[in-house]
Each structure stands twice: as structure tokens, then as C-alpha cells.
Image 1 (cartoon, rainbow, N blue to C red):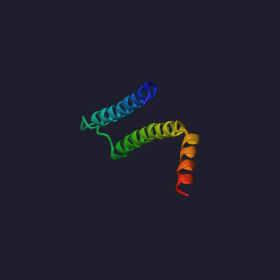
Image 2 (cartoon, rainbow, N blue to C red):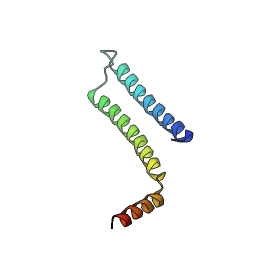
Image 3 (spheres, one colour):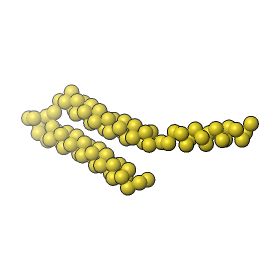
Image 4 (spheres, helix red, strand yellow):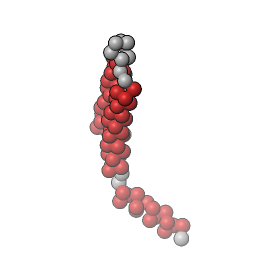
Amino acid sequence: MPLSEKTSLGLEIDEIARLIEEYRAKIAHGTSSADDFMSITDMEEALGVLRNSTNNIYTDLQSKMVSQVDQNELLRKKKRTTASEE
């Protein structure tokens, strides 16, 4: 894996970790006081935001990986393999 891909992946991992920490902090803050307790709806909403944010990162990562595949080379190899089997 080229250095630029490792760096990009590291940034994505850092962003996911940041989002998880943000979620944890929000839940911790929302459950730290009986007078100011976070509702289940608010907890579910915070989890939904976390899911959507991380899903977007995973989707972007998947798109980047697929776009880096050399489809022409794969097709050439497949044609050679198919031709040799016949």
C-alpha cells in the first residue's frame, strides 16, 4: 500500500476515533446528572449521528478503494485465463 493511501487511511481512522469519542462524551455528559439526564430519544439521535458519520467514511473509503482497481489489467488477466482454459 503506497504511503499516500496509508496516510489517508490513518486520517479516516482518526476521524472515526474522534466521532466515537465525541459520542462517548455526549453520552457521559448526558448521563452524569440526575437533574439533567439525557432522554432515550436524545441517546438514539446521538447514535444515529455516529452511525451516519461513520457510514459516510466507510462508503468513501470503499469508493476510493474500488476506483484504484486497474480494471483493464483485471480484464486482460481474465481473458488470458479464459482463453487458456478453452
